[in-house]
Length: 226
Image 1: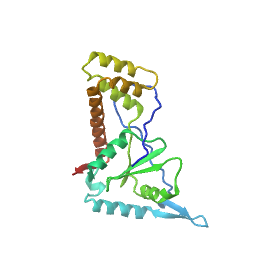
Image 2: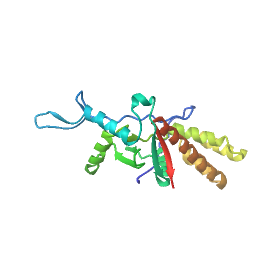
Image 3: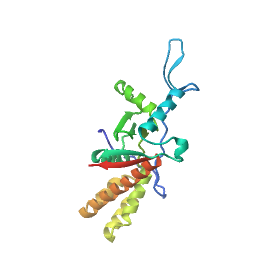
Image 4: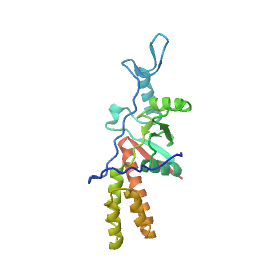
């Protein structure tokens, strides 16, 4: 996957614990007869995937993944998602940094991440867009991301662990800046190579933990295969 960049606009900071960014659900064109309306006939009649077909597909997915029905399983059935180290690293990175105007979806059957444009749908993505819509919250899940307030809290948490009083003061000053907080924070950290490396390790470990928590919340257990 490519075309990643960080969000650079700084918002007002709020002192609160880390939590997931709100994710808007994918909007489907549907009615009482159709789970997904793919199009309309010349006479204006809709056609697509009916609710009965959708329920049948859900049941087939449960059987394919060797899980019991929602009624029997209780809260959330667990699906084992086997991923390579590359796929796992990519998922953690996608949670940490996402491009504006893009949506990212994890395929829990393959471990791959699909990327779609929000504002400029491309014709070549039409088939993928339909596939995601059909399998949304069953096979494809929107990957949440770390927002600016959460990133700020993360920097604050790391600063508390810095043993050097001099460096800690520099970091606190960077965190108090009105603009370009992340850039100033990293610039201050760059004066101590070992602490900069420790910060990146801290961020990576926190990212892995949050991704694991998210996967568990949707009933998925990731297993990294070598």
